[in-house]
Image (cartoon, one colour):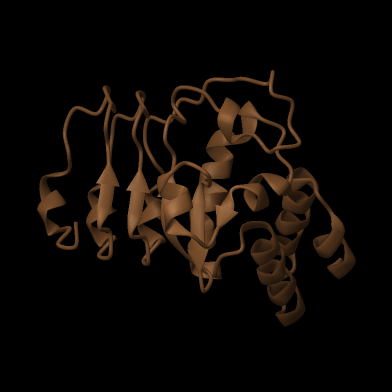
Amino acid sequence: MKWTIEHEKSTIVLKALFDSFENVNNKYTKMLKRELLLSIFGVVEEEIQFFLDLDAICEEFREMNISFYKDYQTNDINEVRRGKGIYAVIDGHVVALNLTGWALNMNSFFSKSQPKSHKKLLNIAKLPDSICDLNYLEFLDLSYCSNLQILSKRIVELKLLKEFNLFSCSSLKQLPENIDELKSL
């Protein structure tokens, strides 16, 4: 199993392995599960649920492989600001997340190994609540997510959030009433 975790490229296979760990809950499988998730997403265990939830939303739109996350991960917040990465990780924590245009098309976000002609619409009407578990998030760009309708009231749990872009989120009718609790914004 350890060899598979280190060498397998298909997230479908790795997810099947992850699911099999749910049936056996011992110290060894917990360690393998943590290692598996870190190898895919590169973030601490507490922040992985967001990626699993986002992946579940995206699953029908692309045949992902592990390089998708590795291709678009960086440790430079400015690269994420410029759209050269989807997320920035520092010390295992997600500090920047750029989901610009996911509601328009996923063409620019496919793994570099994916064919450029593979273009599908992704309808994110609501971000997973688990985004609020990204406690170190400083930058969040949701611009051009034209199908985004709802922001969780829990968004105010992102206490370190300094920049939050909602430009052209045309379906978003209102912000949560408690949005003013984001004091670092």
